[in-house]
Length: 213
Image 1 (cartoon, rainbow, N blue to C red):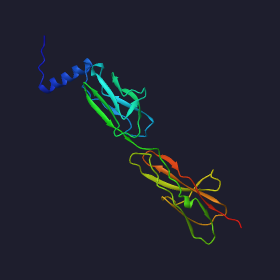
Image 2: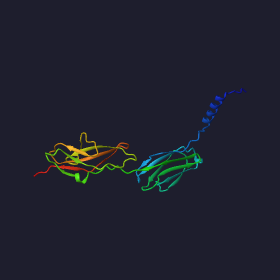
Image 3: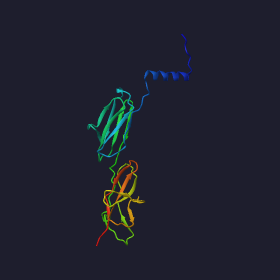
Image 4: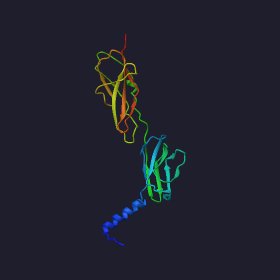
């Protein structure tokens, strides 16, 4: 029988190969993948990873919400596993957490609201067009919601029938300063895009009216 003499570095490689062939793997910590910014009342999916087998004794719990079956905690077997969660409104903390023999993991969740495109000020909703007037201002309230740290871009549009809308070149600020002539009563609205989510919302409209004597 021939005995092999292995150097220390060779022995390490040999042991790694044995573990790989035998199907063993390094112990992984559990992980939670899913949205950290949510709108309360909406169903979201979360993926749990890193649980090797049933001996992990993993428990997943929801704070500030509930699983789709209305439970707040559930036992997990192997991973990856997916769970559906509905988050509550008006709570101090929202969190999904996993505790197991392999370690723990948690994900803090922050709530936001649906994107609101704002509204044209009541005093600007109906304005009369006069040939001698240089410009007209439509003030619009700031947009809200759409993301936990939202960033907005604005684009004003015009329409003569509130069906077909056309972008106004250069009108990309919160309020509209309109100058120019019109030959028919014209409506104006603001389009808001939340840049992180690419969600779009619209304000209501203001009108510049032709008055016939």
